Image 1 (spheres, rainbow, N blue to C red):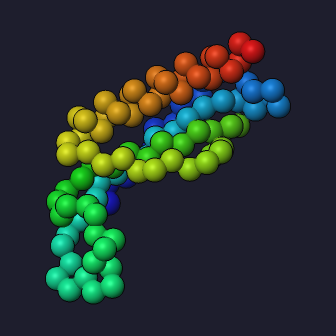
Image 2: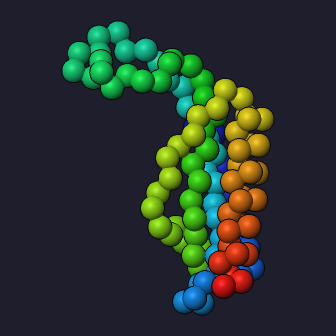
Image 3: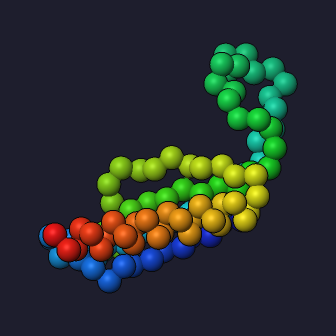
Length: 101
């Protein structure tokens, strides 16, 4: 599996003095069709194929913070990379707003 973690600290702290940041875990997955799904047939919701995956995570003091986020699947690496950029920009904006309170 080709895996990469992009972690960014935003240079601001929360009310408890922890530095606010975010990370983006990027990797690739292959989904294959199950020949005899049996009891799992109703759970088969992803079409077989090669996917580029992104899983975002908020951070405080360099560690994962808060609820986990769902993986997002993309058809191309470019689409995934654009989603990572958009997520980090939004997280940076939310951190600045939180620090301004």
